[in-house]
Length: 253
Length: 199
Image (cartoon, rainbow over all chains, first blue to last red):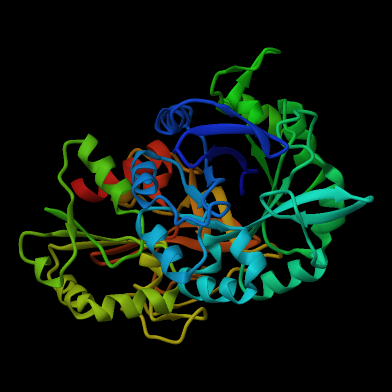
């Protein structure tokens, strides 16, 4: 039986530093990216996502050297996102040893690109990440600067699935770094429109949040950052990941 | 000596590192001419779509060399993920012909949620040397939408359930294929890679 997925997310900035944000701002340095990945290796994390949060913002290409080194250190299946805006870049990153790529900005700019990339590398290796923010009581897609993108989200989800995306990441801006639990309302709104795996990210602060997510929603993976990065009320940086025993408790309904 | 084909589709470093840590030198084969008599074990890795993988093999002249390599009984081939799929006759994902070591075609998985992404367990069906030291029902990482539903003549060595059961591993003579990614499946995956090298 397919295990439910518990996935650490690590963010890197333009200086290749590993950071953790709150509502996409207030960057907090959380240590060396390679060191953090090695700790997740040791803890046998089942999968990991690394996102460069500056590449698209600064309109720069992905840092290929860095990605190659990350892929070489990483013992878990690796998803990389940030600055991927062409099929050539997508293929190059897969060739560096990444299992899945994630696109966000480029998907919003050009839905045809999704089709081109998925035809080449396969849907299973292509994720689209959507930044979600509630505005006037409605969930909107926003860009990396928090600016609203005027699209019909439901229609967009249909189009990108038709074009072959293999996974959707719902990244909740309002909940990022707030450690108040997952925003189930996002899933209640959008999950019925997708038939591919998805990940919810933003808000997870305790194992109970993951258990509750798994109990309430099928085929949604738990995206996790603060919970596996911070320890205690003063938020000391300490990388963690549930042991096999702890995971059994999460799966137990 | 063990080699891995570099045809531009993914995670060679992961394999290289696992073998290196176990004192084994994995040769990365970039050119078909390097597929010489020094190599007796060959890994076909891969992340990609069926036709793109076949097209790359052909462009780099690997396609016929692999067929030729397999004619020597002492040689062994292990295909992983798309590398397993291209060992078959074809796939509904594309229109090109595969290497045809196994005369079955890959079909879309039968599940309401696709692709199949994540850790799933395998049911080991025979005592294949690939599984020495691997417990039955061990978990491995899967990342695919197409699968082999069945094989003729008991070539299936393990099965996995996602919606319905599918063939997650097969062995025909000196050719092996696994649908999951042993190179990303921690200790059990490492074990399979070492078994392939040793046996």
